[in-house]
Length: 385
Ligand SMILES: Cc1ncc(COP(=O)(O)O)c(C=O)c1O
Image 1 (cartoon, rainbow, N blue to C red):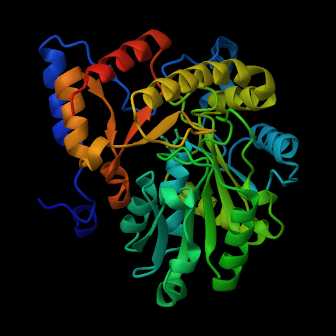
Image 2 (image 1 turned 180 degrees about the horizontal axis):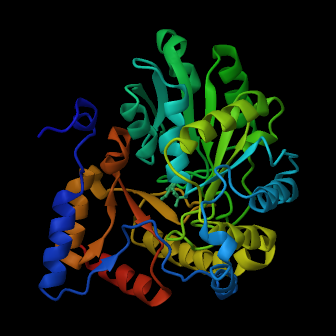
């Protein structure tokens, strides 16, 4: 038996060695602090669990869900988008339920990419953008996100011949792994640029509610964006419900319906009981989210202050639960992260795992409680690099 050429093209998993080392440390009885995984440690708010308990008993939900998502869920999405961003969307044509945003992001290229088409992917980035391109025999073209440019892509540096073959441009703000946010001016530039070159803008907004200062904007707020853009939303981080698997796509009706067509031939939608929880969550976002945000904000403030005192270099993130930090003395990121795990029993993620432009950085996820963060800081203070 042999795996397909397509699967062979998937780059090797870079964290094999670190995972092995982590498991070895745990086996040795080391109290490992894991700041590697972008998965909130806080349980889903109990109000949502209560809604789920009742919803799960409804026999009508035990059958196949609607492919696009139940209208009540899509209406809740539309209401949220209207309240938060002032954008009016048609829940029947412009909103599609997803089994988590990852699923939508991975499937979207199937609707638009032919072999050899170019998919513009930020670097560093959440890996699913380029993996989706590879799975459709598209060619990822990497656009670097640099500290000097506030981790926004410099569109003027993309060569003309690439733009002629580019079909999709992925963006993600607030950004994983850099914690950067986009300005309205940048999004305006993106829409103008994408229209000029006839490129679909696919914006991943998974962290749009995880912010500590100014609310990040939706790309759909930009005039004309709905002609050319689709935006992926997730309930995972917003409501600490990564395991429930629910998100949604919004934007241009043609783009949304093309994704719906792909999905209707692959999956059978989100369990309707989960959609009821999702609708309740979105309808009550203004009450449910602030207590969660205040926990992450405290962690962010504590860790940024302490790491600054230890001499680490980073831009304090105004959104997401990630810190994107330069490795000391420019050490290669894998080597640094191995040393951190080996010497002080702390897991952080090497920047190179998010792409070549992530080299020289490491990512810290604020996904442990205050006491553990204090302990991690204490351990970092003993690190000899
Ligand atoms: C940037 C980004 N987008 C999308 C996702 C996927 O989230 P979900 O599939 O849980 O909605 C993640 C998860 O870590 C992410 O970091």
